[in-house]
Amino acid sequence: MTQSGKQGHKNDPTDDDPSTATQLRPRRAWTGLTAFQRDILKAIAFETGTPYGLAIKGRLENWYGEEINHGRLYPNLDELVEDGLIDKSEIDKRTNGYALTRYGERVLGAGADHLDAVRPTLRYQDTTPEDVGDIAETLPEETPDEFDVPETAAGLGFEVTD
Image 1 (tube, one colour):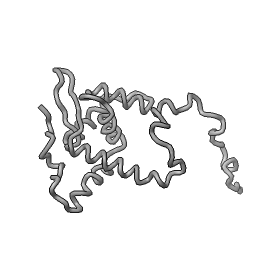
Image 2: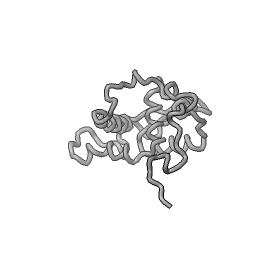
Image 3: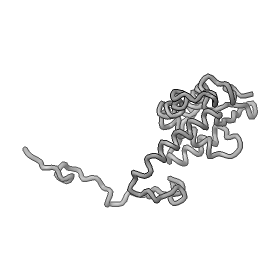
Image 4: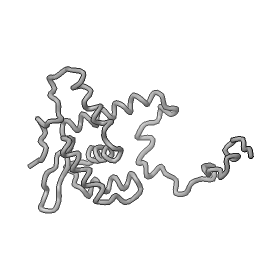
C-alpha cells in the first residue's frame, strides 16, 4: 500500500486546471527542493523497477563519490513522500520501495525543462549526456597542476599594496 497515492494527492493539481498558478506549481516545487532531494528524484527515475532505499543510496554514492548516511537519506525520502513527489511501498518487512508519483514526474520534468532552457547559453552546448557518461568516470583521480590555486592575491593577478 502506498502512503501518498498516485492520484488525488493534495500537491498534485488536476490536469484539467489550465490556470497559470497550477501550471507553475511543479516549477515552484522544483525550486523549493534541496539539491539532495532533486538528486533523490533523479536517482529514483534512473532505477528500473521499484527502487529501494539502499539502491537509491548506492546511486547517490556513485554520483557524489562519498558515503551517504542513512540519517540524511531516509528523512529526505520521507519528506518527498509527504510532499506527494514519491510513493513509499513495503517490499518486505525490512525494505521499502520508492517510486515517482505523477506529480513527482511533473516536478522532475519541470527541473529538466529548466536545465534544458539553460543549455543554449552554455559554452559547450553540443555536449550531450551520452558524451559525458557517468560523472564519477569523468573526474580525474588527482587534480592536475594546471588547476592548482595560487596561494597569494598577487598570484591571482591582484595588485597587492601595503
